[in-house]
Image (cartoon, rainbow, N blue to C red; front, side, top):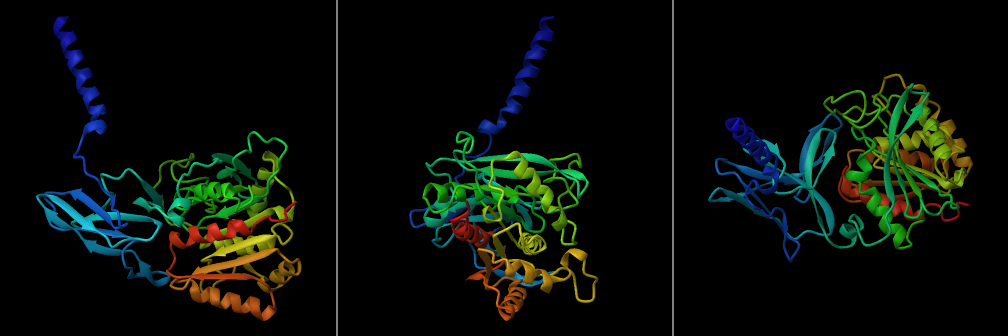
Length: 399
C-alpha cells in the first residue's frame, strides 16, 4: 500500500510538472523588442539551424505571382547568428500594427517568444504595434469600451444557422432608452466573422474614435460572407476542417443579407431607417457591399468599398442573377441619393485597374462618390486606415 501511494504521488507530481511547463519552460528571450528609435529587434534560439530569416509587412515588399496576377508580398531578411541565437534589427518604423513570421531552414514558424498572433485563413502570424497616431488607435486605451459578442442567427435564405460578430458601443447595456445606427462590416475572401475584430482591430478603432468624439456611437455587425459555412473554422457543427480560401462571389450571399438585418433589428436597439444603416467591406467584402447596396437601394445610406472586387468570374462565363442588370440597379440606387458612396484603394493593389474602370462608369453616369487613394497594395494596413476614415463620416444626421 505504501509503495502504491508513493507511485501515485510520483505520477501526480510528474503530470503536474508536465502541465506547468508552460509557466517556466524555455529560454527567456525578448522578441520583438521595440527600441527607443522605433527600430525593432527580433530574436530566436535555433542552435542547429543553417539559415534563419524573417518575413513581415515592415520589410520592403517583393513581387509574388498569384491566380489574380502579380502583387506585392511581404519582404524577407536574413538573421545573424551568435552562439545559437539569431538576431535581426529593423529600420526605425512608423506607427502601425505589423505582422511577421520566422523562416527557419525554409520552414515558416511563429516567434516562440511572442504570444500575440492573428489568423488569416489557415496562416498564423505574430503581431506587434509601434506606438503613435495609428498604433494608439489600434490599441486598447483608457476609454469606455464596447462589447464584442459572437451570436447565432437563422438564415432561411441559406437554409442554416449562421454566426456573426456584433460590437455594441460603450453604454449600450446601461442606456436602455437609446437606439443606435448600424455599420455592417464585411470581410474579404478567405476571412470570416472574426477577421475584422482580430486583423482589423475594429472594436479598438471604434472605442477610440467614439471616445474622442470623432465617430457616432454605433453597432458594428460583422457577418460571415462565406455562404457555404456557418461560422469561422472550428466554431460550428462542421467540425475542425482545414480552413481554405472559399469566398462566396457566386450570387448566393447577397440575396441572404436581409436575414442578417432582420435578426439585428429584431434583437438589438437600433434605428430602423436607411439613414441609420451603413455597409462596407474589404476586397470580397467590398464586392458584397457594392452588390448588396444596389440590390436593396432603400436599405443603406452609406456604402464603403475598400479595395473592392467589382465583377465576378472571367470573360465569357455566365453571370449569376445577383450581378446582372448592374447599370439599371445602379441608376436606381443613385437616384435615391445615398449620403455617402466611398471608394478607397491602394495604388499598388492588384484590383486597382478594376476600380479605375468602375469609377469611370460612375463618372460617365454622373454619380457622386468620394474617393481615397493610398499607397501600397492589398493589405490590412490599408483597410484599417479606410475604416478609421469611413466611420467618422457616418450617421451625422441619422435620426
